[in-house]
Image (cartoon, rainbow, N blue to C red):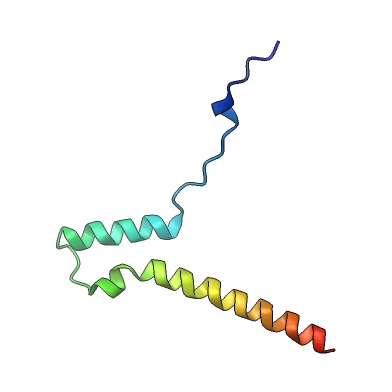
Length: 69
């Protein structure tokens, strides 16, 4: 007889590297350890977003190029 609990089969994704880095930068900024502009404190978020957009654009460009052949 199996005693499986429904909560044991759930999965968790976690926060990830860029999330941890962003939280660390925010904490350092609020504790006045670093004196960066907010755009650089939040840079792990927008740099990651731009990288995803770049990869998607390259992928889309390759698909369009292959269809033209």
